Image (cartoon, rainbow, N blue to C red; front, side):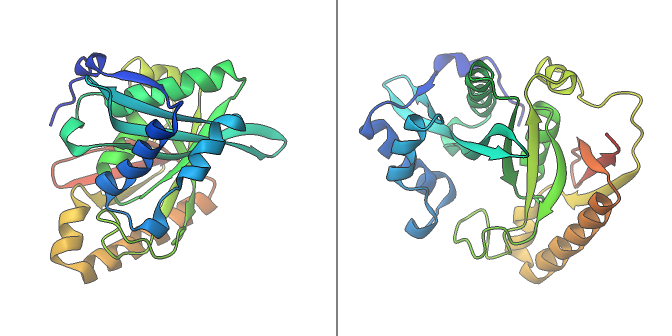
Length: 252
């Protein structure tokens, strides 16, 4: 489905300030992903994020119902402060209206105002829609894969499979990100693909119809990506097709 980027204007994107608003974001995790209680980010974490320099941002529909959110946690690595983005989610009834992008843009705006240069988050390498959003729409890059990062996760999205994750780096003021946010392909013409890794465009259907094949394919993609990352390559592009999609890896 084509994304309607103009309809996001009907929503309000703002930081959550009250316990009621933060509780709504905790509840959204169950409604969006079907998490069990043990896999939820709890209310106490969200309450503290704003107090320690992070944010919980929500998308509010007319009537002030929270229908999507993104959370930022302050982090520190390699002598540099950055944000780790814990979650980004939008209720299915409000998808394809530009809300995910609007939430990330507000997150970026607040990060830049705080002197933050990058935001990182994890995503499932087998989900083509998320990969396209993170790599092409936002201009993120990936240099690391985290095998079974969260252990066993009970959710509709995980479908009983190992929780492999890619670590996305979003360099907020880089030319690459500026190009992506202006609607252009983030890849520079001088970068030629040095490797590609293919995934199904609808992995969820495969996991439902043939879990064994889905698990084998997940392992194969994990090995391929780990091998390419060990060579110093990074995911800088993603090409989404009807049946199959592919990661494009280059040197940076």
